[in-house]
Image 1 (cartoon, rainbow, N blue to C red):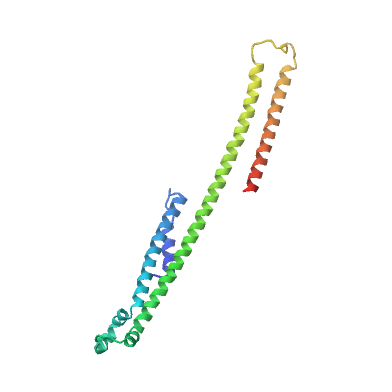
Image 2 (tube, rainbow, N blue to C red):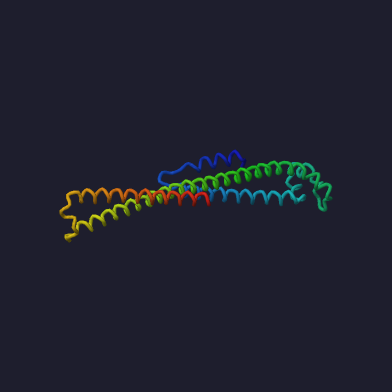
Length: 203
């Protein structure tokens, strides 16, 4: 298990499947990386415990055990154990270094996944803010249209108001209502934009 094999494994498993959500894929990949990191960490702990036992390391030197069995007759001195455990220790330390490289690669991948999650969340927040802005703007437009409809409903009542004989009254009411609704929409949009700008700078 090397850092290169870890990268190849991650590249093979990170291919998205159709229909999967980006955050769900990232969660799955993060769980897989965490599981593999735990397994490699367990391997590293086992290797360290083995390297600390000189007697076990000496007995791993099978070639010396077959050719010089008299050197392993109990009790064996500490100097003899250290001498016989040198070769197995070098081999196991090489595997230990590969395992540590794999742990570093997995931690790097986990950091990249976390950064990608934060980027995806930022993009989703941006889209959500745009949708909220559009929804609010449409609500303002709907309010202005409702005000215009209210004015039209007032003048549409079958009651005498003194404007029935005025030939220019209809045009004045229509133009005044449209101009008033437009001015109200511009004012509310400006106030909303200023509030959004202040909120963005304060956060």
